[in-house]
Image (cartoon, rainbow, N blue to C red; front, side):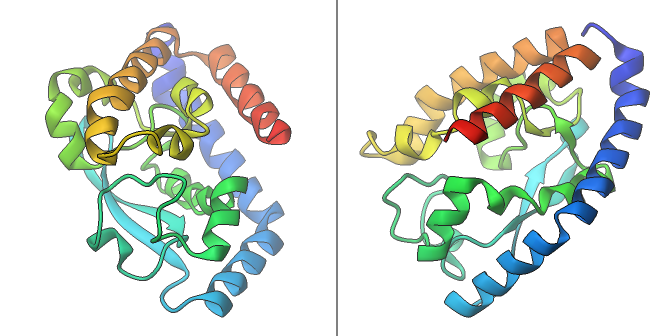
Length: 205
């Protein structure tokens, strides 16, 4: 890790300030999305799920609900492009990544950072616990190298007959390698580069 002082202290201050500013600026968008979800499908506006955070501590992860109510109990923990559990509004939310906006609340709470390895389900981490002993020395994040490279993850998973097996055996190991790359390079300029590349990738979609 390049800068332990930055990762442990400065980064948290930046995360809090940027997340608070983002929630304020994007509040009209958040309201619009909440109304859209309520008007187009039954169930809560937010999707809550337990994920594994820094030092293997569990936390509640927030997203806008993009699937039918209780869909997470009726299928695998990963989704592909043609997953029938995704609502019509949810497909648009996932394509634009607007379903990810509530994670800014997680950033405020200190569960995750703006930049860091994506938080994962405990059942998948168990399969790669040795790798995650290094990865979870830092806070998970909204975006990182893996999030950029796998921005079309649902399309990638569509090629597998068994989506969960494909994720565990092929996709996740590649993401883990990218998580470790981030940890090796973690620092202010690395985070700025990743945030810039993430915005650029979103604009080009």
